[in-house]
Image (cartoon, rainbow, N blue to C red; front, side, top):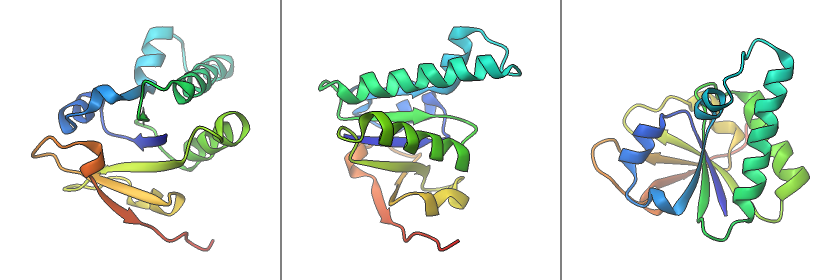
Length: 143
């Protein structure tokens, strides 16, 4: 199973892919809204992160889905590192790869490409299946 990470909205992802029902969706903004928490408090941030961890674990073990799409507006190095830590600690045997999903026409996450083995672009003009996205193999940046 693959984990796809994107900063696009759920609506945009839903309209971009025709096989979206085959994937589990973890939308961080929906989780925050559902829990109705003040994100200025550290204990509430912990609760949201714990909920995300539990969803990643349960979805990765579910045979119903072909992959997981993780949607977050605030994608950065720390988010990616945290996701890799969760995978390595709890579900390394279920997740094959972590892939960045970015818009083909207006890529927004070029500064994060070095953190991924693969970046997949999707078009905004027609619905496609996720497997039809254009993969780009990225070399790790030496820092």
